[in-house]
Image (cartoon, rainbow, N blue to C red):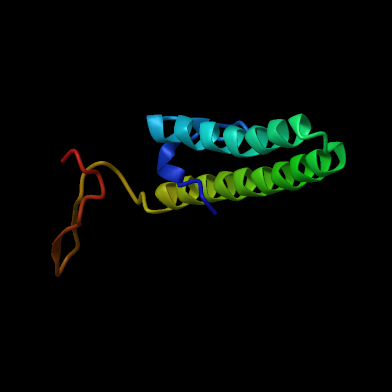
Length: 107
């Protein structure tokens, strides 16, 4: 939903690990969005509403984190899918001499 896969590192962990400052901002905003209303509701003396908000926002955060994690995994699977052959991008047959596009941005 809100987490962009480019903000995070590819890792074997279930929880996306921030790779940029944007990833840390993502987690910081989520923690603020969960805790700030909880604290306000607690100081107002509304423990039932605090529990409801905490449960609702935690489930939403979990769903967002899982969807981001899935998109990271899908993106890394697609990156691996496009690699074909050796580093040499030159292919020749008896009739054709081909130069393949290189998917490596460094070359």
